[in-house]
Length: 238
Image (cartoon, rainbow, N blue to C red; front, top):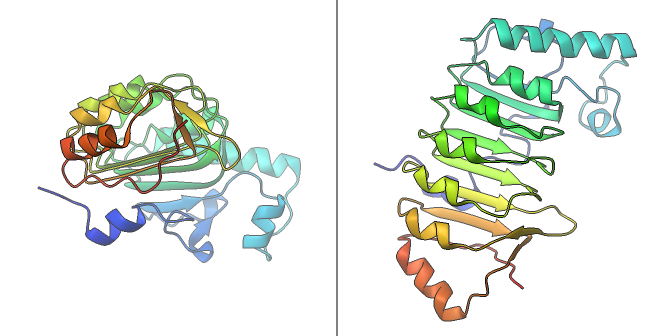
């Protein structure tokens, strides 16, 4: 049984700002009203990007910024059943990443970008269906992603240190896979052979990526035949 609609397949499940308009993005914990779906920007509070999105946002002292971050980490690690969907729209530290993974009922999790290198805390999220990890240039290992058996959508971005994605072949429910490199430069992939073992994929986007294994046009056609309803939107290979 498929889950994603044709629109979600074509435009990617995750939208540019995570599906939350700026007016719905919250910063301090005291803005949270018990919703089970939230988008949080609790860092970079005086940054230029945040000021563009939120021109009326007040200025915060360094003490306030530390307090706000600590309050969110404390909340996420102690109120473990609060959220089903959690999006972060500003820089995420390793501590904040790990805190988010205490939310045991999470079905959807999006990190716009951050400085996380260790993804192992994700193993707690057995109910997770939709996962976006942006700007993961520090990520060292993705073995834990293969343990998230409920995943339907996986979007990873700028995983510069990861060349082998064969661990994803265990994700039998995965319908959409997005692997993108950074805007400037490319991310190396060893090959695309892992896709042959993922027959339930319905949509894939691979971009700004260098494929080390050389594929002839015929081999790429055969790869697509091996994966029914497979769509390669963009593929850069050298």
